[in-house]
Length: 206
Image 1: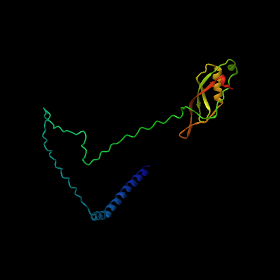
Image 2 (image 1 turned 180 degrees about the horizontal axis):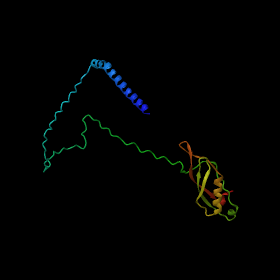
Image 3 (image 1 turned 180 degrees about the vertical axis):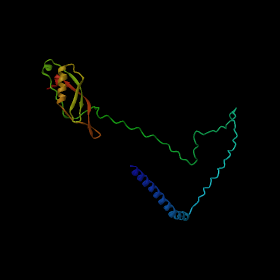
Image 4 (image 1 turned 135 degrees about the vertical axis):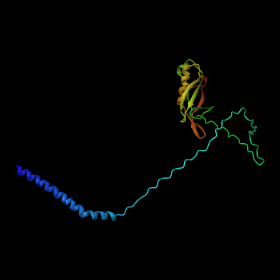
């Protein structure tokens, strides 16, 4: 056992010596070459110039002025501005007349009051038999609206005869009549007319 331990130590010592010997050989062999290669490399030296100090500017001295209050405002000259420029001697004045007001347009929806109408078929009143026996007479005035087609669209009693049967007979007679439409500016329009219907026994009404 002692012999094995001694052999192991001897082996380690031999290895260490061999490594040192190899290192010494390499150093002695390659050291001159390394020094020669380093000597051949040019060295460049760069000198960095130190920046010049920036001169400090001296600030100008500012004098402080204290404003003095104005005790009185100065009098300003008066300037007269003419309200209207004088006319030029070569200017021509032309009076502008206002346009005449537009004539109001008639409302064609409102019936126009006329004094007479033309009949296509005149009203033929029928004397009520009972009014004939009772000898009822009178004049009925009817307020009639004639439309654009010549028909009585509205019939109202303007003035009564005093007898209801005669008033109804007059209304029926006008309702059966036919009228010619009232024309204005070439166009038919509604018209309002007063139509009297007389009932008299001595005239032999139907």
